Length: 505
Image 1 (cartoon, rainbow, N blue to C red):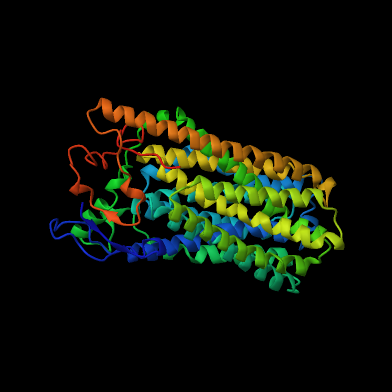
Image 2 (cartoon, helix red, strand yellow):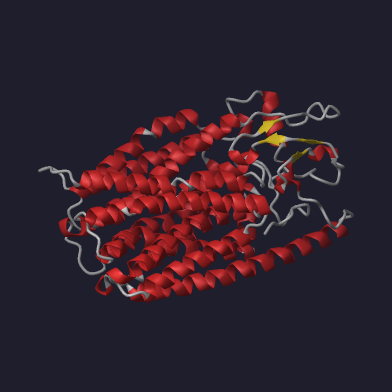
């Protein structure tokens, strides 16, 4: 079989080096422009993460005192945004299918930016709850939409790197939040408190980027402005091996039903729950944990800079490992062991100067949590086909993530500060369970592949189909027998409906 060599596909440059002369219409498309648009998504993922991080940093600069929060009200404020996301997920999954991304994404970003700007005007618990509710409402569809756009443009072997690129913005967002908080924390103003300046600046940064999204974003391959008609067909052909269908504006209820009957979807949701639970604990209570080690406000803020650097490093390393080994589960299990080690260290070590190195190691191990996110998202995209099923699955993923974000902070009682032993103990149990879930998912996908092989034999095809979508080199599927392999790749079939779909683990 002849093939087409792609240069630097994992590094963000999908460029064809040579074309099979026997197939003059082989995909020969330059997608560096789409990678430039992907960087636009990175910017807004960074801003979304920034909006979440500033709540934890604002807590050490007077937010709780100025808004008169008592008891567990701070934890509840941290839960409201994910609660809104959870409530909005059914509508979000439909909007993603029905509304063009070029319209939907700018509207969501503008909405959450306005909500962020309104936070400094809050003077009490009720005001914070209202502002945070609308913040979560407008953020609800961002992750599912980002994920589906990535699946629409890239082969399965390329998706982990792309997902990792926009997830790696967690690191820069953490660093920017730390530097902004450090600088604005020194601001002396009779008008606004430092925490209010932090929210105002981050909200305005979000709002001013809205025109950039509308200008740069394309809905899908078939309507991409930077591609010619021929290049659009070539770009679409690259994705045949994915066997995951093409973009569709039809919301198919049978795919929704299939998603809810699919065991692997619930296992992915359980992973999302655990990751989000730990992630929101780190963002909401991380600064408070550091403060409890004996650092002042400004040192606590600056110590988040290496945390951000480590986040980006871990995300990119996990994506590289997934692409190199073609395994999703092994890098994920490695990350989970490191995270579990971090939570255990924070739980068992007494607070005090003599244990400070171990405590900091435990805290920085929490940076590995964000590496799980991109690994699981790329794992979902690689194992889910059908436009409606993908959007519903990502809505379920986001709903589980929102649930974890709600539960996580509630495990931590302010009366247990600064050790937060009860919350840390519960988090350790959750991550032990997640390791078991990952192993169970691997077994589930292996069984599904065996069932797919039996279906192919029953349909007169070979039992084993080589998964070209996971290869570093692009392979022209049209060189196979088109009547039996890849013929229904763009028919918007689900992974269960298409017997040629191969699950990856």
